[in-house]
Image (cartoon, rainbow, N blue to C red; front, side, top):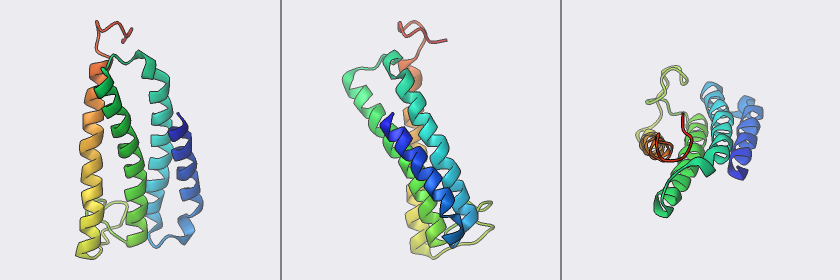
Length: 136
C-alpha cells in the first residue's frame, strides 16, 4: 500500500508540473494514470490477503503490479517530456517524436500492457471461486 500512496503522490506532483511540460496533454494523461494506478495499488493491498497464490506467483504478482503501475505513469511522463505520440495520438494531438524517442516510449508502453494483462490473469486466478477466498 506504501507503493500505492507514493504513486498517488507522484501523480499529484505530475499534475502540478503540467504547465512546465512540452506536451501538457500527454502529461495530463500521466497525472491521471499515476493517481488511478496509485489507488489500484492501495486496493490491491487491501485484497492481498484474499489471494490464493503460491509464494512464487505472489512474488510475481507483486513485481508485476509495481512495474506495471509505475511504468504506466513513468512512460506517460517520459512521453510528455520527449514529445512522443505515435501510440497516444489523442493525447499528443498527433505529434510524433524522433524515431529513437518513439521506440523508447513505445517499448515501455507495450511492456506495461503485457505486464498488466499478466497481472490481471494472476489476480483473477488468485480470486477464483472455490479457492476459499470468498470471491464474488
